[in-house]
Length: 486
Picture (cartoon, rainbow, N blue to C red):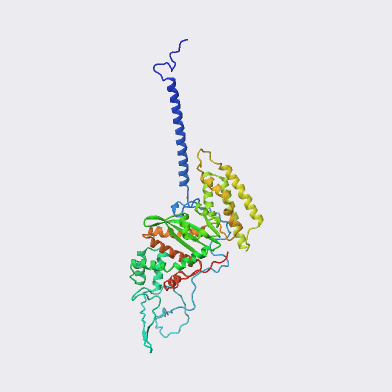
């Protein structure tokens, strides 16, 4: 039997069988590459869309990054039913007149508004009063201190002691030094603008170099205070931890904050991780409860009991619910906020804990939602030794593996729902960086953080900040009291 002329394997013009096989294999490889590339692009597009949809409500981005088109507010707070503003029965606040004014100015009419007659000797029939509260004229007050030397009958000469604020033949006093450090480290004014304010307000020609020297001098006097705050935080029942980047000498440095409701301490370091935390000297020996955002570096400190920030969880759950449509995330967010509302009600009633029934219901519902989350987020199928997990699955695993750290606020009322206290303390550092761009020297950054530790702690304990600064420059810095138990 002859072979047909149109058989590809024998055609003089067509491809051979082996060539066709090779072409098919090549096309298959090309299709596989296209599919793989398409999956990578799909994943990148999904990730980019997720980034674009992030805002201050569903991530840790600050509200300032939302721009002018801010997302519609969706507060999870339970409405009190009260109208905004002053409540019925509340006396309110207003500028009240004083019974003992500092000065009295009398304004008498000179002539009659009717006939134009002279009223110099006319009797006063009534008096109306208005009080104006204003700032007095201010200027530098120069006090010359004279130290007298007297000779005793025994022949010895003794000189009178100068006060603590008189440190040189001509110098600025503790009140002005306190004002300078207050403006720089509390109100975040740049050095040049502080010099301008002093000149305009007090007529004080203080140079920028002198201002820098005042801040450095004051920070050097705070070492005993910082040591005491560190010791008190180390034995506190509940502390908060957080960290943030800070630009120092045009490079990225890290500010670590450890705080409580009564104390604040900052530490500057080149590193963010455990080396910096160990150098700060609190967490390595701490045996109380530390509230944080769940960053893995905190897990090293096994002597401490951990509580995770649920504000972070709520933002992550909101993003998963909005971007991926996973209902379990919305259910978990509702459960956490509803339980926190129950805790607040219990606290108002003077109770120390939720009831066993409430705690059991919380725990049961918690793991029901976790199970639903696992159904929506099965483990990824991959040939990798450690396959990449989605954000939803990473959060789910954290909530599943660390339920005690998530729920701790519900059965220990000394533990807050979130880490907002530490975030508020750390936010002040970011404000300074936004205004001034960073610090030129490490010494300047450390001096600023020493003052921030002082002023934050002073404010938390209800002490006047300017008064505490003036006390510092008199050589007797204010020292914190022992934290209240619980």
